[in-house]
Length: 291
Image 1: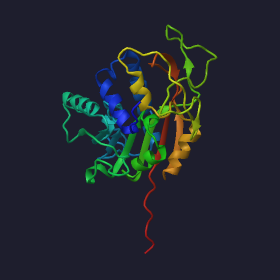
Image 2 (image 1 turned 45 degrees about the vertical axis):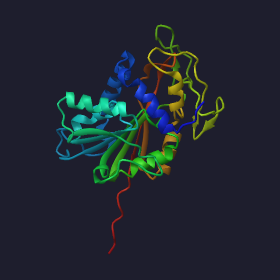
Image 3 (image 1 turned 120 degrees about the horizontal axis):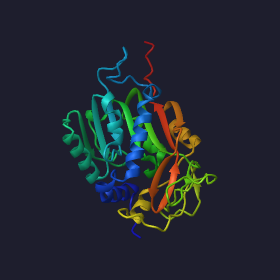
Image 4 (image 1 turned 135 degrees about the vertical axis):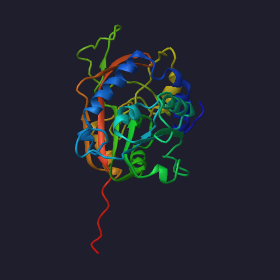
């Protein structure tokens, strides 16, 4: 097997699945549930949004959608921000993201994505004033693809304005239920069942509050299991682990909450009901000079 960086593995995997990424019926449902839930949590996210109808709404709100894919987080918050910038390592995902935005009649000034990698320690990209000072940075179902979650969270925190918020969603460790052949949840099967292998990790190895598991040996049509496995570092996170890496990254006002209901997914031949967590952390406000 050829060794490659996590970024390269992610690029290869997501380039390959761009055309079918959101078309699966269960993804459509998951995306809608996430959208509805987050739009009901605007106050919890903790920044002034635009177009909310409240007296305290903001005139200008800038969002960075990192690992943007085809733009779920951009669509979630689109009505409440005035400018959105996306970054993804996958050129195909970026092309799809921008094509959707243009098809919706939105200008590149309002919303646009580029190919980049903020986590590259030698040459993070993109750079420039346009890519700093965001009110909100989001990353949806992305942190389980990142090799160093502390470095990832810190890199994203650094793109926030002081007082800005990083908000992510991902899957909760131990929050899975197995599903039967009809997709119905099997009660009493709670656990961590999203399975994969990655970079030679031993089966069940636990690091940073997350488990590594062996891949299911069934390919789902339209998905390349080997590429998917290579792109995933961890399948899920504990609440404590997320709090820890957010705090180590220098974020404050950290909170982690779970969606009330599980969501149904089919991945690598597995049928599961999974629990989604949302995490929020704030870049500290700059200290005021006493002079």
